[in-house]
Length: 391
Image 1 (tube, one colour):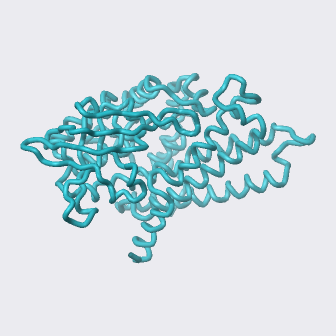
Image 2: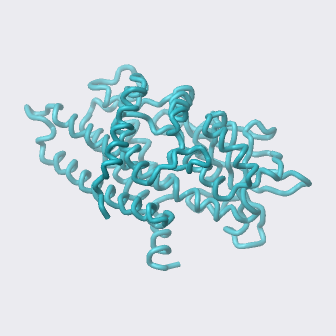
Image 3: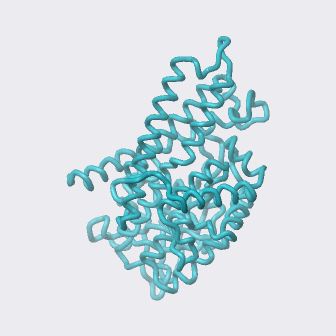
């Protein structure tokens, strides 16, 4: 595996870097830098600008409106995005649903939904986890029953990110109780304005409202909203989650965060010397940097496999585990730097540099990063099954 960029790739890198310099709004960059949440309008506005350039759906092939980039070009783009301080945006439609529709959707579904994802006319949320089925997703109980040309859906979902913004939900539902539980699940598209849907907010430990409970009470959708076949939902879900887990690893953003921590440590003084010269913190930073370097090389191997035509496998679970552990370690390092200045987060009375204002909020929220997208315990089961052949 050659990790050196070619001349053409270096030219592409400069092109991307210049575009971000010319087009990223300063206020968006600053909010992203200090960890403030973006409004729906800010996210949609930025994603529309990316789409105008043709750079929103970077994993999509050209036939569906993507740039048709190589895995290396996608990697370069993500590194330059993070370096520029640009937000990731909301990935539900782009990263998760889009590839699913391209692989399993009918032509009519592709023609209807994919262009509206790109134009940001549709905002999608994900209906997977339930109050009694989180990491054990196959135990979900939300039921979908056929009734003529329609399906009727009853049940509840939880931890539904930005459901209060969404006008559509892609959802896992149970369509057969008489077979193995994985075989009785289907994947369906639900309009969020359908009668019988209730969205209840969940304010997380960082003080933000981005999570929700969603209740379905005799919600009707046409049968044409089924993606794939009845009972194929588990296959679709696994395909989707490999894309989500690789994205969750967040190598590019973690590298930028680490660099910021090193710079803050060098200019934050304690006991008459920079914190970067305090042995305990210096050791923590070095350990995290080594772990991040190992993660980046694992990502390189995944890129090489993808470039060779291999789909993501156990690597996505490995990236998810290590990536989220590093995110937690970085958030802890920032709180260590901030010390007492991190305490009054989400208030105007927050002390010290703006980077410290959201450090404790980010630390608190990222306690969940080793759970969402599939808990570490589940990911380790996936790895043992796919690599070691254990059941």
